[in-house]
Amino acid sequence: MTGPFRCGMPPVKYSAIVGLARDITERRQLEEQLRQSQKMEALGQLAGGVAHDFNNLLAVIQGHASLLASQSNLPQTARDSANAISLAAESAASLTRPTAYFSAAARSSNARFEFE
Image (cartoon, rainbow, N blue to C red; front, side, top):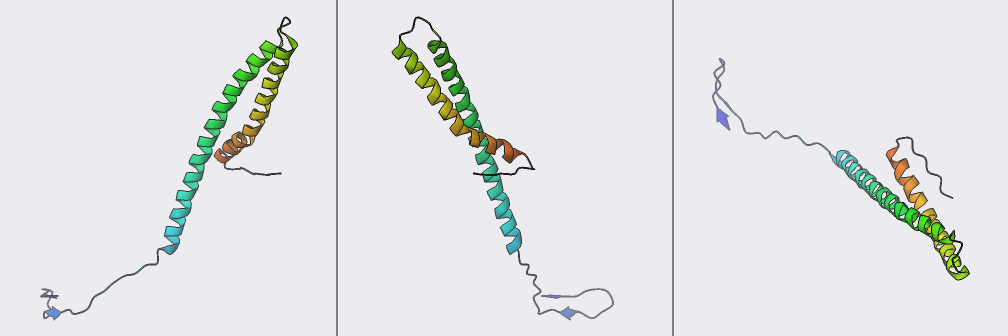
């Protein structure tokens, strides 16, 4: 590249290339960690929402099973079935509790997890 510069100096001919290189490995790794963290947060929110909705359905099932079992004129086999439904719903609710706790704790910045 040749160019005369009018600053009282004779024209100068340039024949060099100047480049700049920067290692962005660490930045890319941090960006990937951020993306992974955002994915995990989204997954936690989704799991928490599903657990919440599932628990709402289980509450309806448990409520109706309890009402059915409390009927005095209900045959014993039907009462036993209603109690079995209620126990199954309670068991299902206990399966979703860790997911709900995880989701709630994931939203907290001071979250600590202890799995047994």
